[in-house]
Image 1 (cartoon, rainbow, N blue to C red):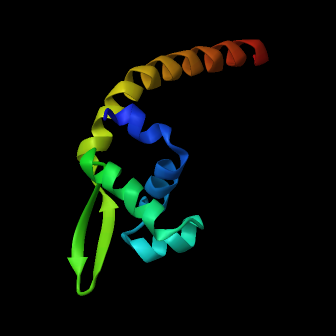
Image 2 (cartoon, rainbow, N blue to C red):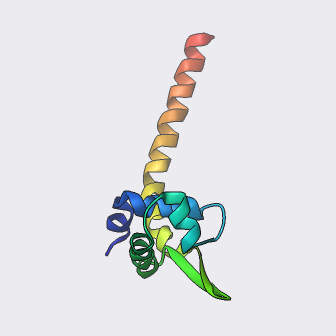
Length: 101
């Protein structure tokens, strides 16, 4: 499954958002998202296969964190648009500066 298909699902995007700030267990994600454990586990499997999350065993629990490798594909695609937006915003700023002088 490609990176864009993976993040097209709103539950998977919410999981990625939850993992942005810190590692989380499945229980943490269930509580934060308000969905059942099998649903969270299913989405985590997809995210792991896409290399967007990684996990480590901590005693009896598995802790999940973001994995940059799978997210890099998205960033590379967006970066081309980021340059375009920056150029256009710089041009808008220059235009507004000229009008206000």
